[in-house]
Length: 190
Image (cartoon, rainbow, N blue to C red; front, side, top):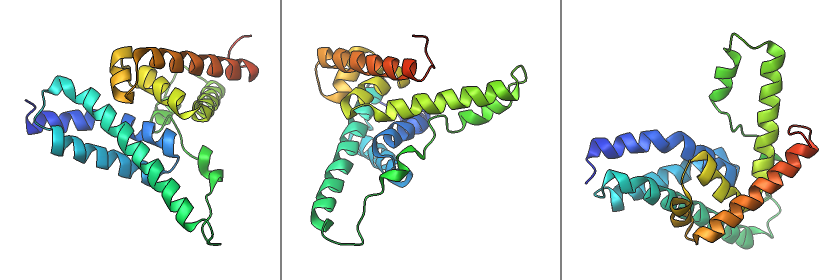
């Protein structure tokens, strides 16, 4: 059973990555914060008595469900208000978030790299970020869980509510799409 302190420590350890993952999906900082907060509250409320080792998979599943709920609400809201002239979806903001977040500051302090190297590295990360954001939802989710959250295939399958084979397929397709896109941009060798 997780103590209050263990639960608190766990939530602190995942909050930044959960925010970035949510931000990839919803592309709205306020919505991503709401999703993360909602998912953390649900974990604490419904599963706070579970062993610490079970919390990561439970949390990833709750986070996925909260994100899907957000999309459902948005779809319903758009259907209800689509005839109002003052309601517009603004897709121009899709690229206005930064995968690196606070990591960008670390790049600037690297003494062994020139300013050009730091700038080039930041540009490459932004291009990679853009390509990840462009992946289809399930491919992006599988890719982020496997390679950003460092979950294994079975954990990812449990978090996504699908089979391990589906996770492998989604990850493979995501990697192929990213590879093609990054080769086309000259980031990876042909």
